[in-house]
Amino acid sequence: MENQAQEANQEANATEQKTVDVSELAKKVEQLEASNARLLDQSKTWKDRYQSLQGTVEKENETKLTESENWKELVEIEKNKRFDLESKVKDLTTRSMQKDLQFKVASLAKDAYNVDDVITSISQRKDLLSIDQETGTISGVEEAYNMVRSEKPYLFNTAKVSGMDTGRPTEMTPKEKTLDEQISEDPNAILADALKSFL
Image (cartoon, rainbow, N blue to C red; front, side):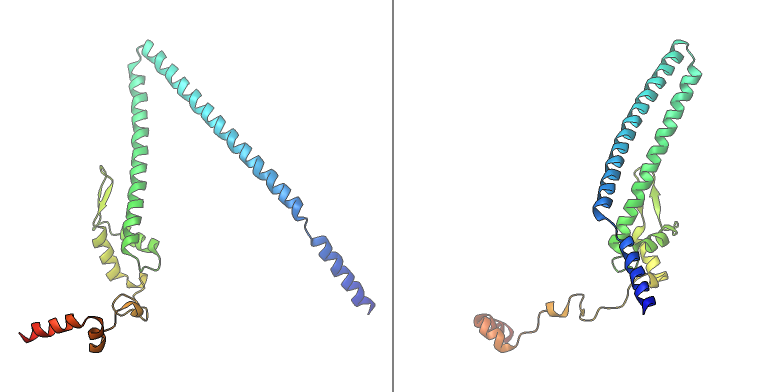
C-alpha cells in the first residue's frame, strides 16, 4: 500500500513538473516575433545600402575607365551586364512557361489523381511540345495530354460516380412529364402540337 501511495505521489509530482506556464511561452513567442521583425527590417536596410553602394562603385569605375579611355574593359563590363540581364529574362520566361503549362494541364486534367504527375509525364513528351522562347508560349499541350491520358490511364480517375448518368447528377436531370401533367401546364400547346402532327 505504501509503495502504491509513493508511486502515486511521484506521478503527481512528475505531472506538476511537466505543466508549462502558457503565458510565459506566449511572452517568449512575442519577443521572438518582435526580434524577427526587427532583424528583417535591418536586413532590408543593409541590402538597400549595399545595392546603392555597389551601384555607386560601378558608376565610379565606369567613369574612371571612360576617362582613361579603356574601351576594352568598358565593353567587357557591358557584355557582363547584358549576359546577366539575358539570364534573368531566360529564368523569368522559363518560370512563366512552367506556370502556363501547369495552368493548361490543370484545366485539362480535372479528373487526375495528382496533376503534378501528369505535368511531369507531359514534360517528358518533348516530341509533342513546341516551345517558343521569344514569346514564352508552349503549344501541343492538348496533344501531349491526350497521349499521356491514353498511355497512363492509372493517373486518372476513370470510374464514374454513381448517380451521374449524363454528366449531371440524376436529381438534376429533368423527368419526362406525363400527358396529364403536360395538359395541366399548358393545354393550348398540347392541342397545337396535336394539330401540327395531324396536319
